[in-house]
Length: 176
Image (tube, rainbow, N blue to C red):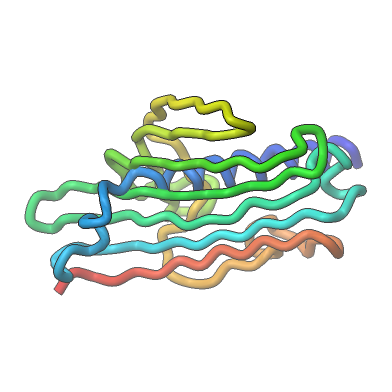
């Protein structure tokens, strides 16, 4: 059972990190669809784990945020950005802010199914007054590229125990 918990915890963390990376890649505020000339995906995520048996005492807390993936049909450019916040009541005890600038993205088979967002860009993490910035390339974000609402059982592939909740909302607005 501990092996399953470790695999699930690792999968959730990787999925959340991937999601954070996709959200961060959009450019400044002007990138939000401009005048409707851009294809725009918007993704919201909420993850909470307050079950010590499932997440382990070191991994209690949550992760919340949004990501946007923009496609410019005129130039073919794919950009985006993301902002995430997390709070841990376990081993890391504290809050983290993750900001992602997406410099390129694509859709391919991955951890979220046959249409998963992959992204390249720059991530900045802020935790307890410390700031780390790094580049990432062609990272599986764990976000599905199919509009819809995804709940805990759809994300994990089984009914999660009490105290564990994951929600992902994917919306798409085509250019006009």
